[in-house]
Each structure stands twice: as C-alpha cells, then as structure tokens.
Length: 281
Image: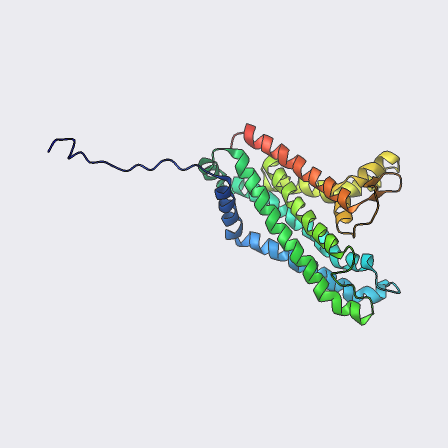
C-alpha cells in the first residue's frame, strides 16, 4: 500500500450561512429568557383589564348612554390598554436594545451576527409580535371581564358588532408599534434612561406641551400628527368616510392613525439603524 492509501482524511463541513430566521429565533429566546420582560408583557394584560374593570364598576356614576354604544364600550375597554400599555411597550422596546448595552451582552451579539441590520430588525420584529399579542389579550380580556357589567345595564356590545374587532386589533398593533419606536430609540441613544425619557416625551409629553401652546392651525395640525393621537384613532371603530385626515375638523381616521403611528415607529427605527451601523459597539 502506498502512503496515499494510509493518508487520513478529515471531513470539514461547509460553512453554514447565517439566516434571518435564526437571528429571529435567537432574539425570541433572549426576550423570553428574562423574567422582567415576561413580567412587562403580563403587566400589559393586567393593567388593561384592571383599568377596564375599574371603569366598568364606576361607569354608572360617570354617566352612561341610553342605548348600547360601540364607541362608549371601546372607550371603557381600550383606554387602559392603550394609555398604560404603550408606556410598558416603550420600556420593553428600549430594554431590548439598551439593556444589552448596559450589561455588555451587545458585544457577543454583534460577534455572532456581524451584520447589524438583521440584529436590529429581528429585535424589532420580536418586540412587535410579543407586545401586539399581549395587547390583543388585554383588550379581549377587558371586553370579556366587563361584558357582564354592560349586560346588566342593557349596554352589552358583542365582538361581532361593527368596528369592534378592528378597534381591538388597532389597539394591539399600536402597542406593537410603540415597542418598535422604543427599539429604535434604544438603538439611537443606547442608554436606558435617556432612551426611555426620549420615547416617553415623544409619545406622552409632546401632546401636553402642544396643548399648552397658543391655539393656532399649525399647533392643531401638529397635535393631529402625534403618536398618541394616532393611538386614539386606532382604538376607535373605523368610520365609513373617505377622508383620512381632516385638519380643519381635527379628525384622524382609523387607517390614518395606523399610517401615522407606523411612520413614527419606522422613522426612529431607521435612525437607530443608522446609528448602529455607523457607530462602534
């Protein structure tokens, strides 16, 4: 036998290509491996249901309509989820990125996935899906928990009523978009405290500041295009009107609210992506 016959061969597998579904799976595991993240998702459901129950118990004293009203029911059921849930969603979105910078785990993340765009997009997708699912559970749970109170007063509105399911879906999607905004803000500012402060100022404090300014058409237009106004529109039943935004009457449709909220979220996600790609880890 020749030396060639005795030569030992070693199998060397071809390098596997890193794919986006794998990055998504990694970010999903990281999100749900932290108890704090799971607790925040649960808190969205509990805050939404708790607020809805509190409003249902006291709605007789606050004033009720004479007949079943979809808009009245939606105001009572979705306000807790949208108002308090967006704050939790923003914080969760910020921590998905800024939390890794604070703990230093962003470095092994970037080593495992050298291309930074898939990392941030995966974080945004996972945060959006998780928060949207929690928001949908919150509004559906709020409706189911408060339905006996509405029925007792003859004001019960079912899920099949016109506009109810779109309003519930819009409320949940708005929370998901708020989480994406938090992810973008976290990537842009990186620090936990400044990222949360910036996102909260943009969504909750900006409308308050605008309302304190002297009344003018410009200020009114700016108020209509804020993130919180978009959330209000998305949590209402869609109306059969061709106008998306009426600056004169101060009207924002359900569809326009979704467009405005998505524009805010994607704008800051893009800014965060540019910072992530150009800046050092």
